[in-house]
Length: 311
Image (cartoon, rainbow, N blue to C red; front, side):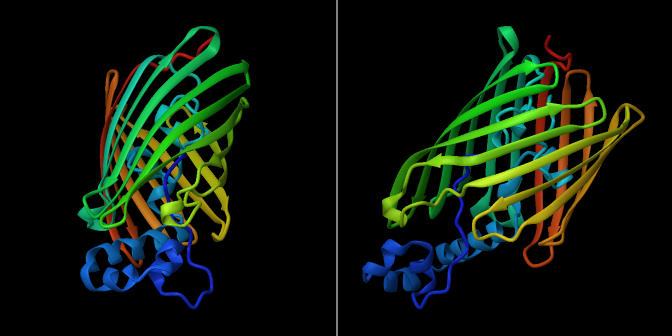
């Protein structure tokens, strides 16, 4: 996905901050870190917990993904899911636009905003641009991404994504590095399957201790039960993380209301959301609860010209 995350600390005798950013262990600045940057320390404390529990960084500020507790990376029409699988949204026809906001655990310091723009091209190609911002002055992440997908067969599409990531921490400066994602999407008449690797390649952040972009393998599936109901399930593997299973459901009621819900096994997160479709537009909102960290909120607006599959 190209998302800048932090792996959980290994067994070490170093202070917490030094374990997250080893470069700090070689400098007396670690002492000043505790005395002058308590809010920043709290943010850094949350980052590995969030990653370890497969929380918000897995499905970002997109309220549809948040409500379903999955990345939707097996969805052939949901182009914001290209952050997790560049082959997702491969059946978009025409233009698509999405704007999303998320406030994880009611922490303003971790607020996220994301904008996605996608367009179908000739010969089964779809191109998309993505911009994401997280955090504020003390700590921030910025990601800009470009992804391309192509339908190779009626059942199979491939995708590749290139991301530019910037990590900034007050008093320690900022650093940038690229990353590369890749994915496949397979469509069967009974189900959809997505397989992807985010962080397949990533540049280093020497200022912050080297590699801070996690490589993650994601397997996601979608099972339509009828024209108005579907079930989604996925799992991910990431170095140093406990594998988890996430599942969600989506039910369309009265053609003007969509009800969504989801659950994640490791953190025991529960999520709920609503969608209000209106012609080519859809407004969505989601609320999810983490047993240890509390409530998160997200909202967004999406526009698509249509959902007619590309030839």
